[in-house]
Amino acid sequence: MSTAKQSYNFQKVIAITGVLLLVVKFAAWYMTRSVAILTDALESIVNVSSGFIGLYSLSISAKPRDSSHPYGHGKVEFISAAVEGTLITVAGLLIINEAVDNLLHPKMLGKLDYGILLVGITALANWLVGSLAVHKGKKNSSPALVASGKHLQSDTWSTIGIIAGLGLLALTGMAWLDSAVALVFAVVILVTGYRILRSSLGGIMDEADSELLEKIVTLLQVSRRENWIDLHNLRIIKYGSVLHLDCHLTVPWYLTVREARKEINKLQRLIRQHFGESVELFVHTDACLRFSCSICMKQECAVRQGDFEQAVEWTVRNISRDCMHKIDAAEQG
Image (cartoon, rainbow, N blue to C red):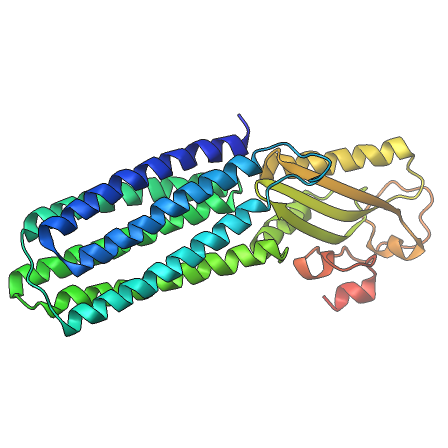
């Protein structure tokens, strides 16, 4: 089963879970009339909406590429995550509005014990499903699934805060705690919404993923072969679960086309072995030049025109440059 299909199937679980927990939270609010529980239920409406939006986006991203979408449909996941981040932010603002109103006009609460028990069950369910979604989303490189999981986790923390506030309220009788706790966790929700929005917009704009770049460059550095004289102009673009990687590989000038292709295949197998099969690698081979001898570690070379001086340590900074490396460039970083 493809990673896109796995993400789609798990998003179904998220959507169904969201509907069930929404019913439970509204039942808890009906019994207690707590504004904190009400705002938690309102956020769950966002969960349900986001769950179905994510489900729809994953069904599209799982479609095979076609003539109109030669790179596939994975970008829709970033749009889905952006919508979800927006909904989370709106939910946070609505919670603040309700909490402030209740702080100014407090209401009598009832059956807090039953309400705490019900929302406690929803918190546990949200955390378990959310953690699984984040784990599976990262494994499958699915931003939509990661966004859904983080949303569920943020909902868990807000629910825990509500439980704590209601517990203190039951012990002390201080009605303002109901609104105070809701305000605190509304801020947490707003921060989560901002982070999801920031991440999704970065994906839409093809922003460089510095963490992923660092992992790939580290792998290439420790696994480099003697025929890989130099590597430069490395670029990465993510389309949902598909990773597109472009680079220029400098090889000995006397290699045949078939021999150069073997080096590309070795590079491709290395990347796929560590980052999954959903990787498209586009490698342009450059023939080494005279100045390449000073950084070439190949020992058996009958046409060497200069002595080896030092190897260029590949880093995110210098491997992304659009030029072949020289000793002076290596010394500058």
